[in-house]
Image 1 (cartoon, rainbow, N blue to C red):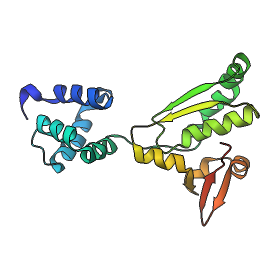
Image 2 (tube, one colour):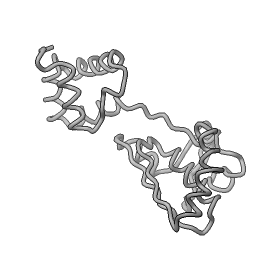
Image 3 (cartoon, one colour):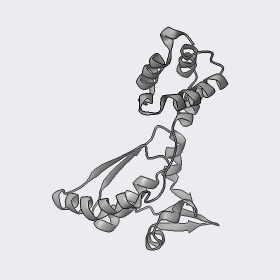
Image 4 (cartoon, one colour):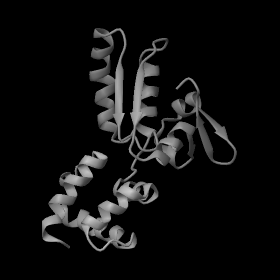
Length: 179
């Protein structure tokens, strides 16, 4: 690798191009993952790899998918959801006419749908806005479909599963249009 165009240079280029700050991750682990992907793309150094990423949208998209980890689960980290439901939301809903929330890095949609369900339960009849974004277009498409396997919805309490999901076929559940 060219010393003048080493890791720090590459990190700055990726931050400018994608908004992903690679310094937020363990360097050795990230370098291994990126170097492996870089070699599979046919690049011999970071400068050549950046050139490929700039010129080939498919390689860039695959690289972003390789970098990002799509971990999502309905009502993941139950303790956090309990604090949100019993402490934070009641105060916010009392103070404000409406809420606008942002689920950044929403992956396949389980967390923003969990929030939507929680808000619907806390304040039926109110319309709240949730913006759900992710760098992975395929994950967003899956979120927009709102179709999940039985395994994925296992964290949804039974009464909420019955109320906000429709079973579709063998072992799949579709999120309700009202969510």
